[in-house]
Length: 350
Ligand SMILES: *Cc1c(COP(=O)(O)O)cnc(C)c1O
Image 1 (cartoon, rainbow, N blue to C red):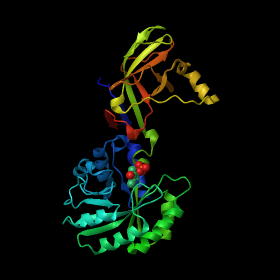
Image 2 (image 1 turned 120 degrees about the vertical axis):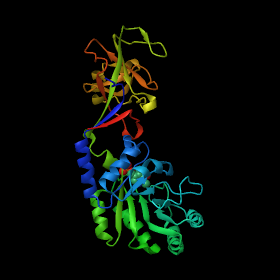
Image 3 (image 1 turned 45 degrees about the horizontal axis):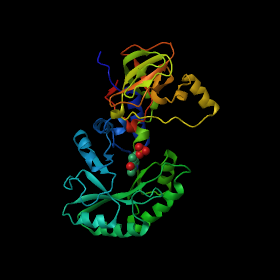
C-alpha cells in the first residue's frame, strides 16, 4: 500500500454533477483555472473545461497559458492585464488579453499582431482598470485600430458584502457612454440573482461570469483531504522530541503524518479567543494549547490535533496526549486546509 501522501479525494459523480449544473445555470460561464488550480491543478481543470464544452477559460497569468492550452480547445482569457514585456505569444489567436491602461492598448496595437482585447474598467476593488474617461478614450482607440479586436469589458468586483447592483449599474453607464453598448461584459463575484437582474436591466449585453471557487470547490463535502500516519512514537512526559529537543508536556504519542510546508501546511495561530466555545474545544484537545502547542489542520475522528512542533517540509509531527486509541501506521487522518494554498501529492477522483 503506497499511501504515504497528502491526497485530495473527490467524489467524482457529485463533483461532475455540480460542474454540469453550474454550466447549465450560468450561460456563458467562464471557468477560471489559475494558481494551484484550486487544488486540482490547472491541467486537470482545463480537461474538465473541455469536457464541459465551454468556449472560454480564464487563467490568472500568462505563465498559466501553457498548462491550459494543450488540454482544451477553448479560448483563453488572461486575467492579469497585459503589460509591455508580458511573456505571452501575441500570435496565438486563442488568447484574449485584458488591458487596463490606455498606454498598454496603444503599445499592443503597435506590435503588428492582430490581438483580441478586453478593456478592464476599475471597480471599487481598485485592483486594475481604467476610470470612465480612460475607458471612453480606449474604446474609441480600440474600435479604430485595425489590429485590435475588442471582445468586451471586464469588471472585477469585490466579494459581495451588500450586493453589487448599484455599483455595476454605474459601471454599465460608463460602458454605454464609452460607446460600447451591447458589448460582452466579463464579470466576477456576482450572485445568480444579480446576474439575472443585470440581464434584464441591460438587455442586448452579454454578461459572462468568470467563476473559480464556487465552480470547482462548490460542493465541499464531495472533497476530502486525507493524510497518512507515517509513524507513531510513544513519549513520556518530559521526554525530548523534534528538531529543537522540546519536552513532551504529558504522556502521549508523537504522530508523524504526511503533509508539510512543501504542501502549504502551515502553523495555524492559536486564537486569543477565550470564549466558552473556544474553551470547550480547548478541553476537547486535552488542554494542550496551554503547553504552547499550536492547533494543526489535522483531525482524528473529528478531534483537532496539535502540532508537536512546526511542520517540516514533507511531514508534520503532531502530539496526541493521553493513552487513548492511537492510529496505526498507514491509517488516514482528515485534513482541513485551504484548497487554493495547498499542493496535494495526489488528486483521486472516483
Ligand atoms: C480569481 C478571479 C476570479 C474567480 O474568482 P473566484 O472567487 O475563485 O470565483 C474572477 N475574476 C478575476 C479577475 C479573478 O482574478
